[in-house]
Image (tube, rainbow, N blue to C red):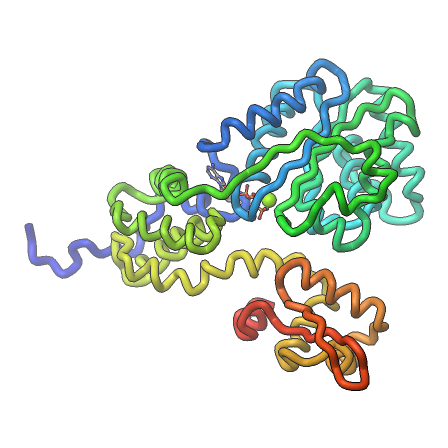
Length: 375
Ligand SMILES: Nc1ncnc2c1ncn2[C@@H]1O[C@H](COP(=O)(O)OP(=O)(O)OP(=O)(O)O)[C@@H](O)[C@H]1O
Ligand SMILES: [Mg+2]
């Protein structure tokens, strides 16, 4: 051994990362452990599509970060590579209206974008189903994060159109997988009666991973993402423990590994220490918050900013400040409150106010700084 002070230190052209991409938020992992029963159920439901029949509809539920999107990506990847089934995964956080959903489907079926204006929904819908019939193709649609369609009151219309496609155009075969991570939302109960009567999906549940499962999955990620010996088992166990504490959302663990790696590099160290993990946690524990904020519209963000200044006040009083910022009417204001409440970003609680009956008190569900820093 030498007493070289540089021993154990990174040089400029070295990194703790073997492959940093595996820690990115939209990376689809090569191995997908602890989800074989869910994958089997999904395959069972989709199998008829491979034979040219309409697949079973499915509802996938489970808390955030439990592998629901990954399961769909894996299955759809296989279907795309090995069969003639058309697959389309729609991210409803981005495409949150019926029109936007069908524009995405159009793109999938025609392999080019629909005209940006002047096409009625009816026409768009007709073109999609006609093409499916013409080509004798089965389309399986995953409405990922379907809860966002509910927040915009677009869920019933969207599902109705999808589920009745074969009636509108005989021979059109479309199956639907709806994915929800909002456990407070009763998807079926929240749909109109006319949709409920045609929607009897198979249910597939993705439970939280327990701590040993989290450690196992993260260990796999570490092997691919870091060089050998960068993180020792007790430190990795600490990452798994913190992830389990944050509701078991695997995104927290993956983000922690990446940030802890960057922290180690900042110290020019070849090894991730426990301290690097603890420091990273302050940021990583909010991955959830960041994800929700990313999908918000300008006026929704505006309300959060106003609330940061008026935390805990009554909705009626806060409205003035909100209107000054956005010029929006009270109805739209109420809708935004409801959406942010359902997303768990704010808490809206009814209280009785002297002379004014019942009114809602609005408060932020996170520290104001954590929110404004990320907006
Ligand atoms: N079994 C697993 N093996 C490897 N990686 C996994 C596994 N389950 C989840 N992940 C990883 O965890 C992260 C979150 O998974 P995913 O996006 O599939 O969760 P989700 O259930 O769709 O969450 P949300 O409800 O918030 O959308 C992804 O980066 C994914 O790669
Ligand atoms: Mg998801």
